[in-house]
Image (cartoon, rainbow, N blue to C red; front, side, top):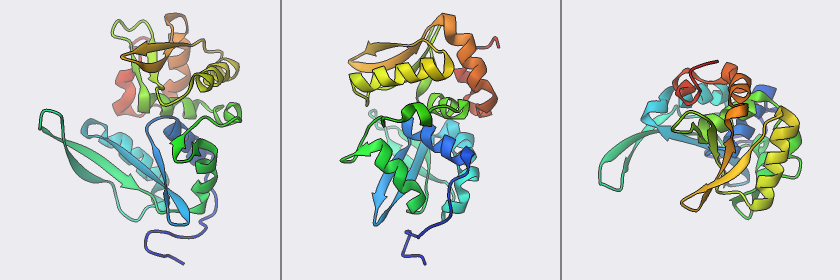
Length: 207
């Protein structure tokens, strides 16, 4: 039975949906408590419309309203266009909320090594919060919302699950996970098959 935009059980997430969701939570996706259960909210800039609709295609059975346009006023007063959609509030998202949130704030769960095994998880995380260095000799994943201990856990997980070496760099006081040049090609080859076309600019040109 539906209650506004809150519904009961709708089965369980597929392995692909689960991987995309974990990657999105690690990135800039947002799980929100809404009534009894939890909903997923996704929002990206105009140039990443196809990325938003890629997510929508996978989660549309949990959505009532197609992605829609929002206008935001930037610091200079200029209006920018963004795409957004939200799922219904469902119990299938409750466990992810309990795993990744504490008192409304994101955290890294103790069993992240189990959750962050699929290359798809890594690809979504990078599409959300990653970018190449200006000199193309490495890559960064923004991670400023996580604690020092959580960074250490993430670094260990990336090494044990993907053999990736990482370091924590800071810019303007904000933390970023750095993937060095020696691992950049391997990293790109891991995530390349899962990258949405409009996000491939984040990859090095040479496979």
